[in-house]
Length: 293
Image (tube, rainbow, N blue to C red; front, side):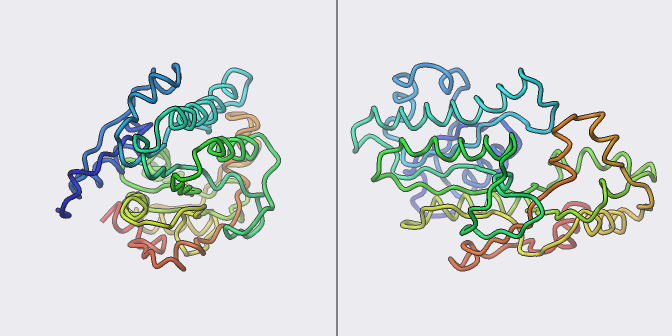
């Protein structure tokens, strides 16, 4: 266990979600005092939320509804407000506190969905997606503009997360085990990924470091396509990958949201690697070997 971490109080928005549990467990293993923020506080008056944040040292924001669902009017509102409105509320709550009462650091989840699909991006890229998801992510990040200037803000643009309990792996296991697994759409689209352990380590890294604020792409260094991922998964599970899910079928199922599966950006973790962060699972084979043994 790390020394003296028990005096560092961390508040997590979205602690009950998949990534929230992964990150909270890692921080607790390192001895940090970790607690979640209730959902009603995230959507309630900023004054009440400020009371929850008072005297905490680090604020981690992971709140956000799943994006892979039909983008009808109701779901779009949920996707947007669960990210943008809650973030605005967190920033406003920090404003209401005296400087000595505020968390010194904010570590926030974002998404690689901000980037235009089919292009290669580092953190310096401003070639952003102009669709629904891209606009949501831009608004999500911009909501932190209200944060008091002396607070260190680190934003992680997170790729597709792989792990034993990740939604991606859970959804793919059954068709692959039945022998009907295969590529999605053309299979040529990039498949930016990151292992859950590396996500947890990145949030731990940002918690323990000073003066590393800014935007970081949280994605494994290896550049692969959906077909590469499909073949690697089939090989690990010893199952065929001859089938494919055509784009029209995905559109019937998810509507416009199907573009999440059929169009992706290629993303590089340039700033993370330059800052000395080391990935435990830098390749798809390493990531899948940890998940499936």
